[in-house]
Image (cartoon, helix red, strand yellow):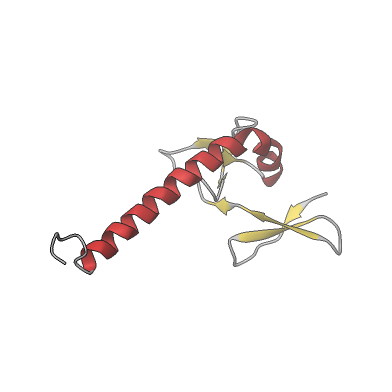
Amino acid sequence: RRRIRISTSRCAPLLISQTSFIRVKMSSTTATANASHKCLLCGQEATKKCSRCKMAWYCSVDHQKQHWKYHKKACNDAFQADQYTLHKREFDRIIKKYGLDSEQK
């Protein structure tokens, strides 16, 4: 029987036996009345989302693991696109801050 222990970090340890742990990265949120999310695997109400892409919702860690082989490609693509946007925004901020965007040298 598996159960999740509460942790202050973003990674919650998943208890496998008395001595071994697997760390599973997953964010937990509460579903609001107007934005109810469904588990991608079973369709039940989901309270956890993929902490990488933040687009896929699951009702449990087990369902996230079972669905990973299908979600992996979309997750990687979404994560890469998000990283590009974040880096571009930061790069543009630095260029503007130090006045490197002007034509004068």
